[in-house]
Image 1 (cartoon, rainbow over the protein chains, first blue to last red):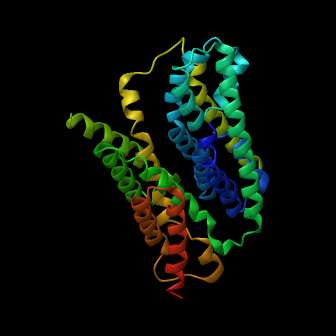
Image 2 (image 1 turned 45 degrees about the horizontal axis):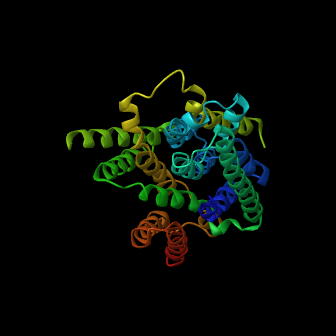
Image 3 (image 1 turned 90 degrees about the vertical axis):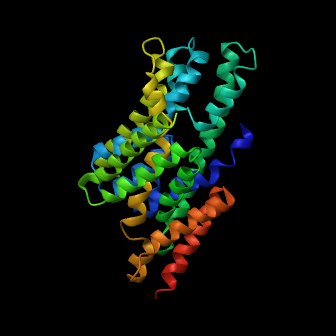
Length: 215
Length: 111
């Protein structure tokens, strides 16, 4: 777990200070980290709130970005099936790309009992959670003293750009990305940021179809 | 912090928790259909790319609010240079640095 921690520091700082650059207070900024605890979707939610998007577009976008957690939770679930409900809910709240990666790697190779598995999950998640909360709050305070002309809000699309380019593993993924971007661009003037939703859906569809045709 | 803000963030938090807990809670009740799992793979590239577009082509950065408009919007050019930096380094920090630096540069060249 520890080797994965430094990577979240810049992202946590960005998640903290960009909402502030939109005019939110540090407390507003921290709320996202506390209630959502999912970096990319936090950034998307604040960007869309700033663009006065409708609540449905915001929730749909958050859901789309966080859909990958359904897969993670499906893969982790059998290992935590016998835990009590509170533990399971906390495990759900604390689920991240990082804890998924280490548990997915380490659960099958160790013969741990339930308590050991929970302890492993809890330890890693607490470390990550604490660091993430600290980074957002620090980022938010830093954001309050940085003047507006630094244009730090532009780091949101740049961060998404880096995350998106990192997902282009196959030709089908590239087709999904390009279609998503083009449809979103064509729909820029649609009300309620609908272009974004249509772009996402069109991109997913294009990726699926491309794979099907080329298999 | 307005009431509307709290409601949106709380609902977004609820949606996130629901997705994260979907299987840890519900594994005894349902399984994922195969088409859904297949489609999930394309959600990150499609949605993230769709999400970038308004951030690059809409709105004004703080530079413009502070120092006035310029003929050519620096955001798309800066984003293209950031993408180039990503393809060369495959790392996030150089991508962000290149993007921000070229945003300032392209703005400054026009004033």
